[in-house]
Each structure stands twice: as structure tokens, then as C-alpha cells.
Length: 305
Ligand SMILES: [Mn+2]
Picture 1 (cartoon, protein in one colour):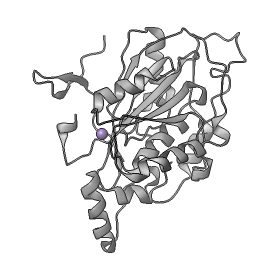
Picture 2 (cartoon, protein in one colour):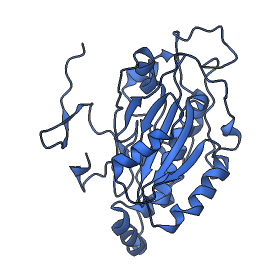
Picture 3 (cartoon, protein in one colour):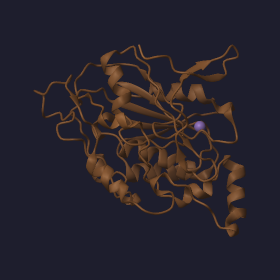
């Protein structure tokens, strides 16, 4: 996937990038009772203005009598409405265009990151995104009883605002009790802000985010495995370190796993423009596959069985 190159940085969005969800341990339909209230502090200093509150009755641990198999609407309409009102650079998934006077600073950051990190810095960590899903998604219902997720985000020399936007968007657009934890796994980065300042930031703003560090450079897969070994949620979700998760991204990924623990799911992966950070669809969906050299390929969808 990363060979796809320069034209469009595969920063994922709508529903994340290169996201593979794997089931590790699935403890059944029970809903965890620790609805740890990260929301009252989580993200509020970031001027997000929006935080997720689960739909009434959605997975509420106090309602043990409710049927976990019942299909419910997981949308948080209050949060969706608040997001629609947001204005500013990059809001509603729009692109940002810089003044010519900023070209030098933009170029310097571009060389380090391979995308326009200065544009990223101008946008809120919780910028709003347009809801570009197929309209039928808006009416989809998912099980009330869903497993919890550990979201594992490996990174190496990631830019600050793109890394933090990944964390903020995956947490605040998901039902709080379903995100057991977010594990940032540092593959031996040297940038100083990814050291102590990152740990201070996540502990000041979240209660369910932690940072693990490799003792030497390990590469993507060993870094993912290190995160997975330390995860405590029912389901493992691997995200790239420069994603934005869009509306209602999590329940559709967990639902098929709740129905069959052998399921591995992959979301629609939209595109964030590498230069303007404009958010748009990639295509109408495809099957992920590998060729004989193990390069990632996208193949046409088959008729639905
Ligand atoms: Mn990527």
C-alpha cells in the first residue's frame, strides 16, 4: 500500500488507514463495566468542542437485561450536529491553502514528513469531516453488545499534529466504553517532541492512552506485535499514525467480529490529500490482496454473497 506513492499520501480517513482488525481474545458479548469517564477531561483542552456520548442504552453496563443481539443505531447525533457547525481551517474536511510567504516553512516540514505538515498544524486536532459514506450507512444498525477494542498505533518520526489527530479522532468518534485503550508504539523515534512531551500530553488529556517504546529500531510489524502483546482489549485494531476516523467508524468494524470471532475486517479507506489535507473518497471499495512479490493490491469487489 505504501508503494502507491507520492501523489496521494495514504493517510486514511473515513474509516482509517491500513487498518486491520484482528481478533485476539473475544470474551463474549458482555459489555465492560468500567465505562471509565475519560470524556470529562479527554480532549477538552483541545478545543474540540465535541465529545462522544453513547446513544441511549447503547452498551450501557447498567442495563444487563438488554439483549446484546439487538441491532441498534450507534450514531451520536448530538456530536454529529455539533461537528457540522464547526468552521475554520480544514473544517468539514476541506483543504487548506497556504500563503506564498509560508512556502519556505512548508517545504522544510514537507521534506521531513513527505506531506504538508504545516497545513496539518493549522487545523484543529479534532477538525470536522464531511460524512461521505454511502447514504445507506446512515441507516445501518449494529449489535448492542460489542467487544472492546485496543487501538494500536505504531509510529516512527511521525509529525506531532498528525499523530495526535489520529488519537483524538479515533477516541472522540467512538463510543467511549468500546475503546479500552489506545497504545502508541514508538519505533525508536529521535524527534524530541515524541519523547517526554508526548507522554506528558497524552497523560494530561486522556486516561486510556499510553506510549510504549522499542529499545531499538524494529520496523512496522515487530512494532505492531509489541503493541499487540501489551493490549488488554477484546479486539486489536491497527491504525497508521496519520489517520482520521470519521463518523461511527468503530461499531461496523466490531459487529462482524462479535458475530464470528474468526472475522478479520478492513474499513473503507478514504484519502487525505498530502498537500492540502482535503478529505475525499478513494473509490467505491475493493478487496485487499497481495501479488506474488507480496505487494499490496486492490482488486474489484465480488458480487455480494
Ligand atoms: Mn500511512
